[in-house]
Image (cartoon, rainbow, N blue to C red):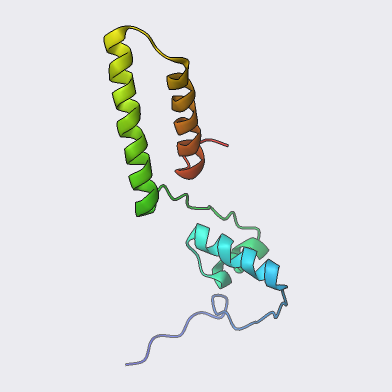
Length: 112
């Protein structure tokens, strides 16, 4: 059994050909990937001024996750020593700020 035909107003039977440079196409593919859309859907939505929502990924690759884990272990040990002695070395605050900056940028937790 054949699929029922679409109403004329919903049928996409018009085509527009557009040429892009290599860099423009690379940016379009990257934007489509971030938005979870095909290139066609991204271009169609942008051309029709429909808002395109970019999906933010919070995933880390395995190597980065392992590095963050190791940093966390070392930071945790330093905090335990600081709590036991009652002295917080200035390096500890600097390291904590550095780790927070990395997480904000790399894991996209709302930083710059």
